[in-house]
Image 1 (tube, one colour):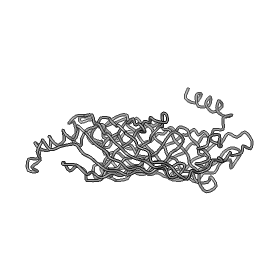
Image 2 (cartoon, helix red, strand yellow; image 1 turned 45 degrees about the vertical axis):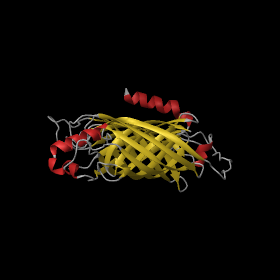
Image 3 (tube, helix red, strand yellow; image 1 turned 180 degrees about the vertical axis):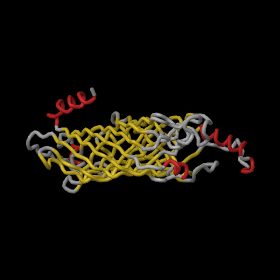
Image 4 (cartoon, one colour; image 1 turned 90 degrees about the horizontal axis):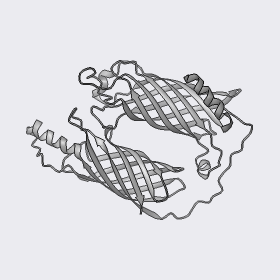
Length: 356
């Protein structure tokens, strides 16, 4: 049945300038934490199947990004480790082309299913994954050649997959897998189609704009079983566009994370020699700067922040955020982001914001 649906999809989209590719990957779990060294015993193997919609400049943003592809991909990763289990993922992705379209960089974001998450009774060794469902991102950097023999081409390069639940539940050591990739692609063609280049002119001045952003979600501290708690983050920031697709940001974050309050209470009781008061303020305030890359109505943003108010010293003074935004209309936007302290994920944030 799956094969029938696949071929129906292929024939139904053959006239819509699609391409498909399939790759085999052989990789290694990177030892980014001591907590997962006991899990790195074999090399993961995986298969990636992707469906891509080509662009030719029908919309202005397409030519600004050198006519990228967009689509969705299916991923199966065999960790070759019964403790870790296996992973099944579905992603949305963009392909960006360089060097006469021979080099492709792909950014994918999606959700994965793990077959054997942590369980204190039956699988207490799996510190990497504690939930069956978790978000994931991946990157590809490939040499790609289309239409080598008839409509068949080949591609090879490197792939990086990150699997983590963003501390929604502990433990959450996560895994980073770097793989060698080898694959084939098939391009559906309808003759020679010309690329349409945008003739818009670059503005000489972009005004500073102001934004209010509210983010929320649930997370759990590193103490397994302490319980999931909600958090609320409020941000105010200014951004300035300096090119068609690039913005810089500077702003203020206020963090109200109830899991940190519970963690402080736990530390005050469990480690009395550290002289931590359970009444220590858990609220934090940070200043941040960031960069935003606009891709049609979507944006990818990365931010670096510094806590200017943090009575309880937790995971250092610096924090990072990486995520995506979607412009609902000219005023309202939504977001999905991951807040981290270096390799330590703290929270998956779901947000809504407005431009003032």
